Image 1 (spheres, rainbow, N blue to C red):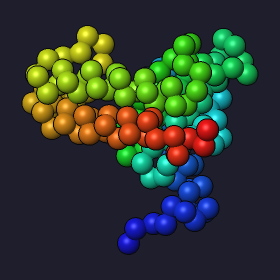
Image 2: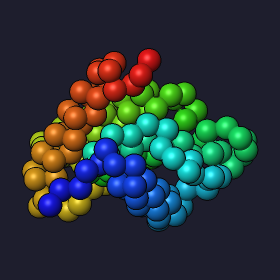
Image 3: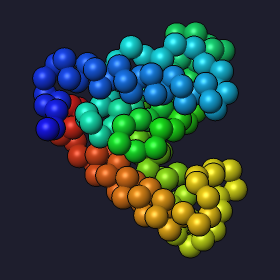
Image 4: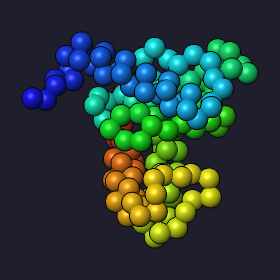
Length: 145
């Protein structure tokens, strides 16, 4: 049975689970950060959530953006990215580059995902998630702007 993510209690539970996932991921990655937003900066459950992460150097300001959902959990610096939509665009750009390299059997200089034997499968999955992010970025109706 599929959950109805339009029900507030289902949406709230999903967001809480995603927040924990982001918190654990940032800890694993040794990201020195401040508070994680109590609620995503933008989300479409159960697919994707973009989280504002407070800077530890500049409290009260966003230092990082994180992404979670039915895709890899990841983060980027907010130094030049000021809006969740821009963050999603940046994740799509980076993931597009990484998936392209993986599908060609080449490694990215800084981003590692899985073992080389799995790159064709993982690269294809990442490519599809990248395409989903690009669709969201281009769809003005989901951004309420």
